[in-house]
Length: 395
Image (cartoon, rainbow, N blue to C red; front, side):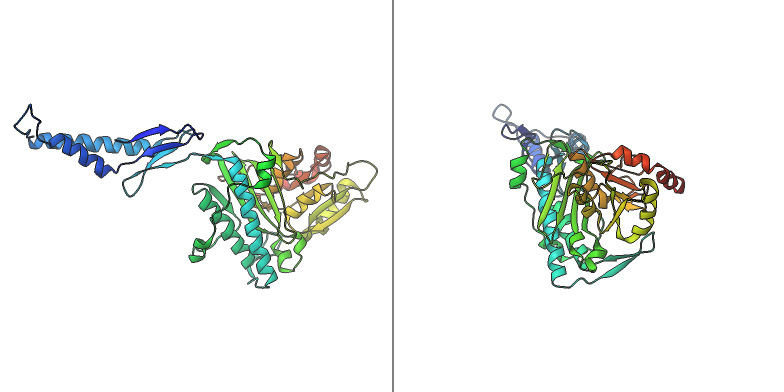
């Protein structure tokens, strides 16, 4: 018999007493066909039809249990699944957000370690993935690949059924087996986050940028380089981690629950008689500068920089008032920064003011431009409305 009992010590944890289906069926058959006891000295013999009916019954029960176990969608309890060995196994259908945050921090840092080690050893093995939509080279290095392996396969070991979307891809090899299982606890998370929350696996999408600012990485402009992990729940950015591997600094936040101690808001209030400071991508600073000065005035200062992660952090450091992007950008570049901004009452939207959906099933491209701010978001949206209209007409 297979029995399932609630374990009183842990939320939604069950203990399954397992017996293979072969053992269960064998026990049933022995019980059905064993000789009668003292009250029936003559053994019971069944006709061929009787045997057929019994085996049909047993097969029907087994088939029903398989379908039930595999199709169960109870989000509060573990699924029961039938393994290849014939045993019943459990699979949690929800996940601890606190553990997911701790793992995200650990893996962003481990990916950053690989990025730093490869850069310092000057073994980049640079290749080109082609050109961006703007015609710029889109490089990939061994730093991108090794960080991807550390992060993505780390998630596979910690949470095997998680949906993870990464910028990079690799052919699985022996090096995957060397990836360490990440830690599910983190001292700062334990100190800051007091309450946990569990969510359904099917609602979670993890976005990974294993090396943001690859072009700057190849140029040895280390200050711009980050590794990023973002957790989206039903398409909404909820956990964000931005790690700066060459500064050994990590910013993280869980929207509505807390953030890293170093994540401070050194805001510059817009409209206080000072020139607006806009941070933009190095690759097309000239075109954005023209647009920015047209929309915000000739005194607007445009700061060219590499990496979406760096640009978002510059808002917290008071370097810039707004981060603006007027061309296509991928969601793994911006999801983590979006979560950090939301946690600190900031905003990241398209230039038209639409929220960005980070569901795995959606388009990984954001083609509506980008505006990120900590303050005065609506004012900037109004200023850039004509540019948003142009982008909308293109797409």
